[in-house]
Image (cartoon, rainbow, N blue to C red; front, side, top):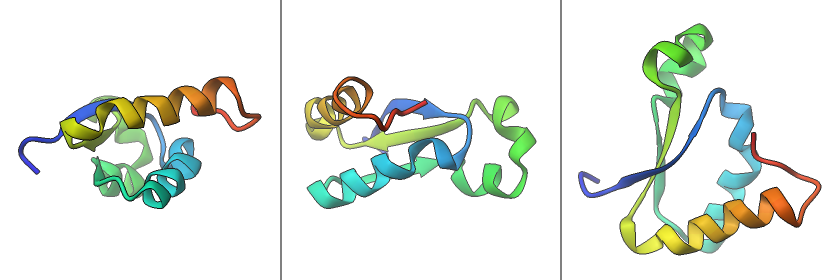
Length: 79
C-alpha cells in the first residue's frame, strides 16, 4: 500500500458512503486514511487534513470516472 496515491479528500465519513459502495462493486482496491481517527474525533478532520481516499495508480482513471459520474450524472453528489 506504499504505492497508493491520494485521489480525493473528504471531511467526514458520511461524505463518501456511496463512493465506497461503488468502489467495492467495481472491485477496486482502496482505503481511507485517517478514517478511524476522524470517526472517533470528528473535530480533528481539519488538523489531520481530512480523510484521504488512497487507490492504486492503475485504478486512477476508473476512480476519477466514478467520482465525476457521481458529481455530474446523478442526484447523489460527493461533497
